[in-house]
Image 1 (tube, one colour):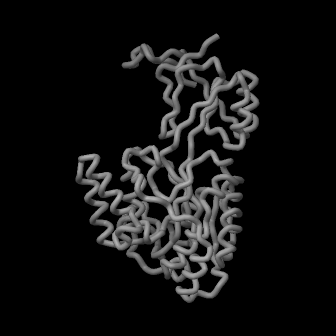
Image 2 (cartoon, rainbow, N blue to C red):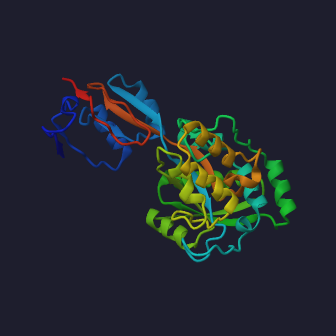
Image 3 (cartoon, rainbow, N blue to C red):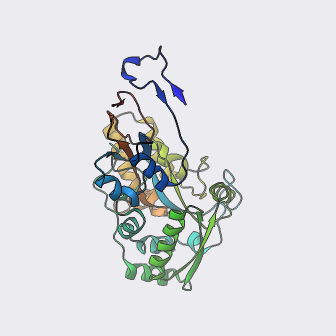
Length: 324
C-alpha cells in the first residue's frame, strides 16, 4: 500500500490519497474483479481478453507499444559462459549463418502474432520498437520464404531435418509460441524439440552457454542503445550468444559518442540494414531473431480518468483521478 506524500514536489498532480496493490495471479480473475468494481485498474491485459474488455461499457482501455521485444536468442560462440573468450559452438545453427537465415525465413511473424497475441502486438524483425524516434522506416523485414529457406539449407550442406532444442519458459503463452514456431519451421526442414523450464533456469542455461536457442524477451529501454549494444558487442555483459565482430562494434560505438539524434538514427539504420551493408549489420549474424514488440494494455474502471499508458510499462499516476 502507498499513501500520498504531502511534500511531494508535484503534489498538486497527485489526486488519490492511497494506492493498494493486489496480487491476483489469474488474469481471468483480475478481469472479473475489475468488471465487478473491486479493482480500479489492472495492467498487462492479455490480448485474448481484449474483446471482452472493449465491449464492456464500464471499462476503458489505455494502450501503447512497449520498448521491449520477444525473440529467439541463438548461441553461436558461447561455449564457456558469458564474458569468456568466444569459442564456436558445434551445432548446425551456430556453425553456418545460412542455417540461421533459413530459420528466420521459415517463420511468419504475422501468423505468429495472430495466433499467440490475437494480432494485437507488433510483428517486427528489429530490436527497437516502432514508436522509437530512431526506428528506421526504410528497413523492411523479409517475408516468409520457405523455398528460399530450403535452398539455403541445401547450400549449407546440412542433413535435414535440422534438429535443435528451443528452450522456453513454462508460461503457457511461451510454450504455445514455441509450438507454433516448431510447426512453421518444420515446413522448411527443421525439427524442433521444445524444452520448457523455469524463467531463472532459462537465463542460467543461456548465460552458461548450455543452450542452442532460447525463446526469450527483453523489457526494453528508451534509448535504443539499451536494446542493442550489450547484446551484440564483443565481450559485453549481455552478449550471451558470444558474437564478436570489430567492424560492427565500431559502428555501435559511434552511436554512443554522437549526440545528434539524426546522425545517431543514420548510424543505427546503417548497422541494421542487411540489404545495404550486410557485412556491417549485426542483424546479418542472426544471433537474435526478433519476433514482435509487445503492447502494454491497461484496463480501467470507467470511474478512473487521466491515466495514460507509457512505453516502459510502468504506471504513472500523476493527474489520475477516481470519480464517485
